[in-house]
Structure formats: structure tokens, C-alpha cells
Image (cartoon, rainbow, N blue to C red; front, top):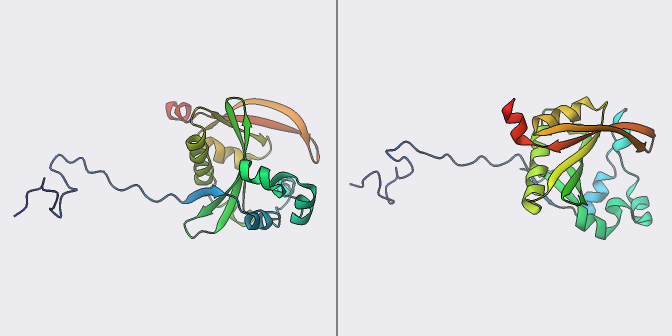
Length: 188
């Protein structure tokens, strides 16, 4: 008969000390380099007002102008896609490299907005940035009226550190800068 400490025992994982560590659940979302096909798909996403300013130009224009994800070099260096467990494209992120900071821009597929997945989506992106640039601070900018996004960012560990105006495609906009500080949320 095998003992509880015998590695060949079927009960080996249930040690007498009670320090059983369950397997980590598979994350809801994972991040990978964005393909051209995914970039084309993202350019078709249409957001309802007032979120329409988050949409992109049509793919052919992006590619012809060589801007954003339409430029293969920028896409390779700055853009990632986010997929769910079924390998469906659910969103994207852009990583802007600043000195000592990675600023993230992100977008979720329009039909998935408002369904409670925002925090897990943001956390998948933050984990990827932290793995790539462990020494960097992580921040983002969000329009002050976008309360749904602000709530998701706060729940994911971001704090508002500054508020300012800057131009948007639709005129001047008021933005919050939010910095990833998960330890600050734990203290509350």
C-alpha cells in the first residue's frame, strides 16, 4: 500500500499538511501579436454613439495611408490581439513605448461591451505588458465621460492620477490619466 507521501500514490496531491494548491484556472483571455487579418476585422467594428470615436478608418485607407495597424512595422511593434478560450478575436491593445512607461490603448469588440468582461480583458493586457516590460509603469488615457471603461480600469487596478484636455478627432476632450497601481486598490 502506498503512503500519502509516495509520489506514485493517486492521493499524492492531497498531502497531510493540508497545503493543497489547486490548479490555476485558465484565463478568460490571452494576448498575441496582431495579424493583418485581425487588423482588417477590427477596422470593420462599429461603435454606437457616443463611442463611435473609438472606431478606425476602413482597412484599405489605413493600409494606403500607412497609419496605425495599417503599417506592418507599427502593427508588429505596438499592436496585439486579445482572444477568448475559443480563439475568437474579442479585442486589441496598442502599447505606446514612453520612457519608463508603457501607455496602453485598448478596444473591445462592440457586441461584447457592457457584459462584465472588461476587467478580465484589461487584466489580460496588463499581464502581457508586465511580462514584456516588467520595469515599466503602465498607464492609459480615458475620456472622462466614459464611466463604463473607467469602472473596468479601476476594478483592474488603475487609479486616476491626472485630468487634462487634449485634441480628439471630434474636438477637444477631457481625459483622465490612469496608472496601474494594484497594491493601492488592496489597501482600500
